[in-house]
Image (cartoon, rainbow, N blue to C red; front, top):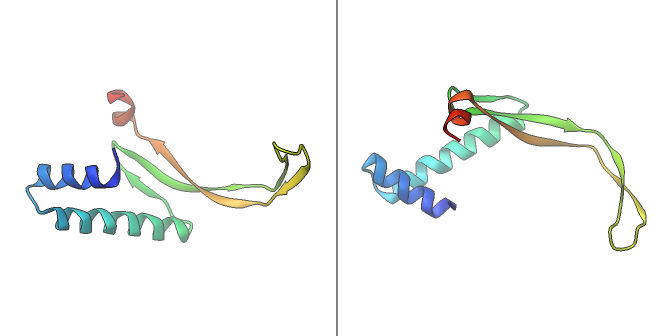
Length: 89
């Protein structure tokens, strides 16, 4: 399912226009992104939790040349599925 299909499904389920569903989805993603950027966590009971994790710098290899490269440290987003979501899968 892509973003357009999700917007269509949300609009149909909620009985709202596609424009309103798009606005709601964009608001959700903006707020989750903003919270994670500040180092926060977003928990949706039954669905899951969004959080961030620090990856340390490490050494890797270029697969084409085999040359060693330095991969810098960075912050990455994580999602952990909740119990109800896992049960439905």
